[in-house]
Image (cartoon, rainbow, N blue to C red; front, side, top):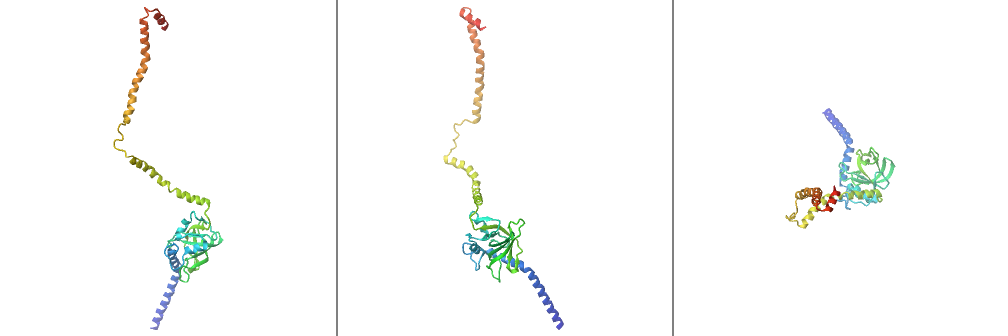
Length: 281
């Protein structure tokens, strides 16, 4: 009996050890997924949707960067167009704008606190890692590494406190928002993109304008009364043209004959006529 009890106890212990090992291996991925799900509600009471009982990334990024943009993190990049300078290179004080990805449906924003090298920066942000089992925690000077193929900061891996290392997810990034006015060429680009949307409606207006003007004049069914059909108008000059041409061509031929015969008829009794007739031969 004791032997059987000992075997059961040994099996229970080994099963617990095996289960703990699997849990330990799955923990980083599970924790990251939980953190991403928490960031889908990154809103605050300052116009960023429903307030939550813990700090969100948006108000903290606004506070530390001085960039006065409100609304969910996923809207920051487009809101900054024409108001703040934007770019692909990190600067101290700039805001890194994360695009929605996976469970992080509302994006994320984090302020750059230090630049280490061309592929490494330190961030200050809120509500990224759950610390001590609590969300909404502030993390200062945590590492973010550019893992994009072109070194353009379009993909990053970010420090994740529960695993004490960089997270495994390659988060897509829009770029950096700088707390300064946009460059002239960027302002012109924004204006040009806004103007190109208007001509798209111009053809519709051009096509519908004649219809509106015709309706305003109240044209009736007899508006063609008295107009000669084009086929008849085209035939009328052509039918008259041969008659004119025949008269014009026949007149020179018959006129001299009549004049000559008249003069010759009176030449026997008229000496002057004989002289004229002789000279005409």
